[in-house]
Structure formats: structure tokens, C-alpha cells
Length: 344
Image (cartoon, rainbow, N blue to C red):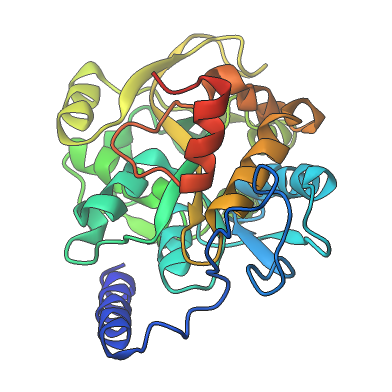
């Protein structure tokens, strides 16, 4: 993780130097609004390259990847005025990785927990000294819930029992890993107190099923299909966080308490304390200009019901501003929000 962020900070510094030395005419895909478009939906030649756009999601076994694929399909089917528009969803390390790749010009859109996005915008937390200033909020996606899954036969009753255990804490650069480390820290567990595996929940679920892993952290939708599938193959449990641990986490982050109802999964017998945050859509202000940003936002949120993924229900525009506090707005999305009356 330290190597990842050191490399990111170095890339950020290099990018700033190149920008300072450039002549201002080398930026791709950043044409200005000519003022003559119809609600920003008519492309002027040379303004924006709308082929080969990419949205960063997460690991293939998590919620981001399949949901992101459906979001891309809905956007592709409903964007108007941009011939050749093509958006594809790609697997990544999730939140922090997506924000880093947007900064580096390698992604156009990304899914992220809103808390790492805040860190990126402010240059704090995992982005200390590496502020990301070329992205904007484009809408709420769904509430994310940290679910700590353990093998029922591993004798694990509390996060404290994970000392010395083999646990998956999420891919480097993911919101899952950031939150997992915070939870472990709340129980006095630090690096070296457990055997950490930097992998997404999809890979972790397979290893849990085979008995080669004791536990896995997953910042996922509720209920998570991957957890439901795993429960059909192996007896598993969800760990509940103590009141003291939740208080520590809330004091040191923006995560909040959420009680997972007992009927969320068939294998649950009682409610479980967890923490939650918002998953949000962010977009590059370099490769996506205001008009295109407006059209992408409109295409997704006016057709949100076409997303069949279980978490797609949370794309309902009544939730559209969740997770936006403190984040910069993408100019195109902001224009859509204003037109629809979503901004107070």
C-alpha cells in the first residue's frame, strides 16, 4: 500500500510539472462548449472523443463490477447526440485506484466510496500530499456495507479473534482495504498481527469455500449475491462490530453504524452491527467536458430502472445527491442536478 501511494504521489508531482511546462494545447478530449449545442447533446467535431471511454469498477467478485457493467450498458443505450459513443466497464482495484487512474488520464469515469473521494479532493488520508483536482461528483449509486465474512468452523466470534488468522482485506487501492484496516485497528490489530491477503471478495470467496482462508472483508451491497452464493457452498457467518469499535471508527472516519437485519441472508439468526458509506459515480473533468457529462448523467438517471442488478434500485434519482457533501461537482452533472431541482 505504501508503495502504491508513493508511486501515485510521484505521478501526481510529475503531472503537475508537465502541466506547468506545457503550452496548454496538448490536452486531449477537453474541447470547450461552443455555446450552440442543444442542451449539450450535439457533438462538435473535435470537441470530445467519445469512443473507447472507460468506467473503473472493482474486482470481478464484488458489487462494483457487475453493477458497473449494467450502468455502462444503460448509458450506451441512452446517450443522445454523440455518434460512436462507447463506454465500457473495466475491473480495477476500486475506489482509490479509480481516482488515481482518473487523475492520470487512464479512466474517464469511476465508482468510489464517497470517503476516499473526499480524501482525494482534499489531499488527505490515503491521498496525503497527492490531491486529485480533475474529477467531479456525478451521482449516488448505492449504500455500501462492510461485511466481515468468516468460516463457521473457524472458531471466530469477534474481529479480535482474527489475530494470527488468514484474512482477505481487499485489493490495494480499494475502499474495502482502507475500511478493513480501520476496523482491525479498532480492535488493536495492526500489520503483522494477521496474515493479510490483498484480494477482492470474488477470489476470497473461492478460498473461503475451499477452507484456505479464515475470513474476508467486503464493502458490498446488501444483500450481496456473492455472499449468498458462498453460503450455499459453505457454512459462514457475519461478524458483528462492538459498540466500542463502532465508536472508534465513527470518531476516526466518516463511516456510520448500520444494523444488518437478521433476514438479510438465510444463514443469519440475529442482526449484525456493521459500518456503511455511499458508493458514488465520479467523472474526469479532463476527458469529459460539461456537455458530455450532462448527457452521461441524464442517460443514466433518467433510465435507472433499466438497471436490473439488485443494487440498481438505489440509483433512483430521489437518492441522487447522497454522498455529495464536500465533493466537487462535475459541471455537466451539476447542470443536470440544477435542471431537475435536485440541488437545494
